[in-house]
Every structure is written in structure tokens, then in C-alpha cells.
Amino acid sequence: MVHISGYLKESNQLLILGLEQISKYKLTNDPFDNSSYLQHLETELSRRFGITQNINNEVYDIELEFTERTGTFVHKQFWDETQRFERLENGNFLMHLNCGINRELIGWIFQWMSNVKVIKPEILKELVVEKHREIIQIYEDDIELVSNNSFRPA
Image (tube, rainbow, N blue to C red; front, top):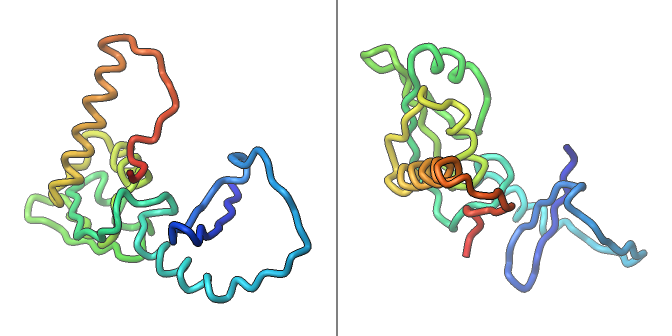
């Protein structure tokens, strides 16, 4: 997937879109010096798990406990520049991250299913549980799916 980034001056926000998300655009020959925005881009991306926008401007100390088998795989991979692992007495792995919370992080946690547990922060635990309940409700009530991004900042 190819992404394009931009900067919204009026809201001081970084915008990253997949090319397939863009339905209309206009090309111009207007020169633009992006050098002053490159540092902002680098700083902003260093605060994110992946590229999706964080739920707020906070950077959190995150701890995730992985089962021994899953942790053996996860700890050998690169997921985020802040990742750090420690082996627990029970054989499990504790992953430490220092980043924002976003849709990409929560989706990544879900991919490990019952082989991961959020230890901290509390807000991340609550978001994972809330999203899990929302998914169960879809099945229990046979709710029609509609596109949403419940982790988009207000």
C-alpha cells in the first residue's frame, strides 16, 4: 500500500492517507518547500504505533503481556522503535512501548487474540474491552455493518 502525507496548517495536524482513499485531487505547478514540515512529520510519526492518527496527543507507557509461545515470536520482530521486552518468571514476555494509542495499535493487539493482555495503561485496557464488546454485540444482534472509525480523535 502506498501512502501520502500532508499537513493541515489550520488545525496543525498531520494527515496520512492511502492513495486508494483519495477520490478527487487537483495538480498544480505551484512550488512548495516542504523542508519545514519534514521535522514535524518525523516527530509526529515517532509518537505513533504505525501511521494512523492517535486518539489524543498523549504518549503512553504501554505494557503488554504475551504468552510464552506468542512472545517467543513477537519479541524477535520489529514493531515499533520504542519496543523493549523482558522475560517474566512464568516464561511469558512483557512488551514495553512508549507511543500514542490508535486504531492500528488496538487492531494489532486484537490479532494476538487471547495470547496477549494489556497490563497498562488503563485507557488502553478500556478501549480493547469496549471494542471487544462492540464486536460481540454485532454478532448477538446481527447488526448490519457500517464503516466507522471509533478511534478517530474528537
